[in-house]
Image (cartoon, rainbow, N blue to C red; front, top):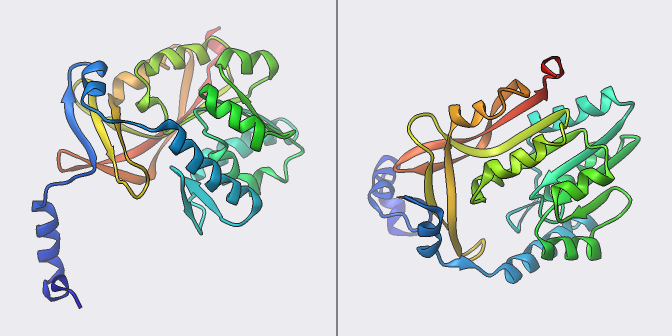
Length: 270
């Protein structure tokens, strides 16, 4: 028995709030470079190895689900995103062609594999950093799962129906740059998933400090203004649904939910 077992639950909550947090999201930096200078960065090779080993276990059926290199025995689905993928496939005779930007070595693909496996034809294309593409091609690529280094190269080889940005744009110095690249190819649908937003105020740059049980790292992370973000889509896309993720984080003592958006290209404007 531990001392905490003698402390009432409500008191435990108060103590946890008073204790300084070591991990999570901190700061309000004027530039991305400033945040990067105050971050430790991360060992990309070590993280890649952890992700590879975890996803190989998912691929082989030894584990059910992987997120951030951590294995779980139960899959956490993003049901709104999965519903859109199946909806698009239903409109195209069971065919689905996806560009998964920043999709690691196939985390979202393997997460949804049980549902995707019954479709007539699936092409899941991941756009990632060069080292991830190299590992992806070596250990994971097959007739359904492929890897590319740029959005352009993926579109040139595929008739992409859906572009997925899941838990990635907030970690890019220029997130709107990559949205613009996708816009240029006019995909019929865009899914934004697992992204934190601010409802008021300017875009904010923080530093995320990752708990060492996941991996030792700290790096810049955006909290974009929600209204400003949605305005970027206004000219070309219709927002057909928004949703809250099961995940939420703490910023300045306040809970910020991860959100998602489903956009459909507005062909009537063109």
